[in-house]
Length: 185
Image (cartoon, rainbow, N blue to C red; front, side, top):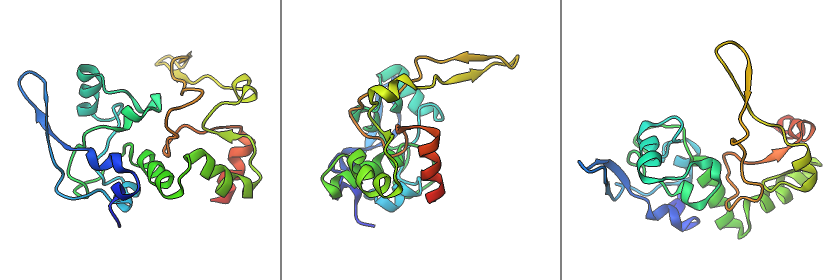
């Protein structure tokens, strides 16, 4: 329940988006309360995703806000859609939880997961950065079309060496290693 900015200072810089001016400039204001890790874990911190939220989509299209699939710092530095704690929306909250973990542990999230989760489970083939072996086995995402056919989406790949280890997405792993992770839960 401590402010998340105590561990991930950048989250304390974010403001609430209160609409757009006539010229499309975002109107921003300070949030009414600090974001806590609890809010992040409950998806009540004020974040969304550009592929679900029209306001974020507008920021992407008109203001160049990068998508979270870029795994960049800029992609999570989004304005809040509402005051922290006021409502629920699925978004980059868990990506920010990863930043809190990094702040507490003083290491990248991938290192923390490797030490604290993967090693105890015997997982050796799961990471945010693609090894050469992982790259060789990387599956292409597909989209099902109205006629039932599948279309490859080669542009829907995460960076091989991401700027940010995203807590909500971005791990690469084999099915067998993922099954070890799922069995743990």
